Length: 185
Image 1: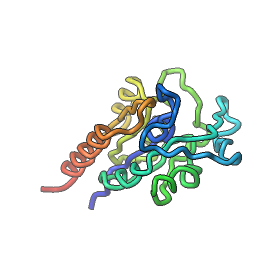
Image 2: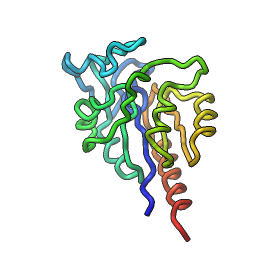
Image 3: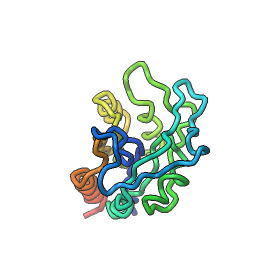
């Protein structure tokens, strides 16, 4: 019996299009004002500490769409477990598993491979996955293809516009292709 592929979700960029050209909340998005306790990252104290914004822009319809794509959803963000408190409820998502990046969070690598790459492959543990983020590079594609023995889709999302219908279409196709190749004839 095969399990659904994993969908590793980054928040800032794909779900929160923080880099909009206008600098304002996009149409169909909700401005979420985070309380002061949410501004401190679960990654506080790391070499490149990340301080969360005071507001995030989220499209509540994205949660329902994500749940229909054919994946097991998993947070893959410096928000880690805090995503279930501050992001998931706005999107209508149930509590999700998350990748605990531990001491790797926000630690740049000298080879240009993203700090999330190895922890995501380890978490996947041989399962197919898609990784939705705005920071992957060719180095990540090459690295993951070398160390991950099964299908992986590194799907880049423009942080100026966030997830769009074409992104959901690409993810749906990937999940369907993985399911077809894992199902015995």
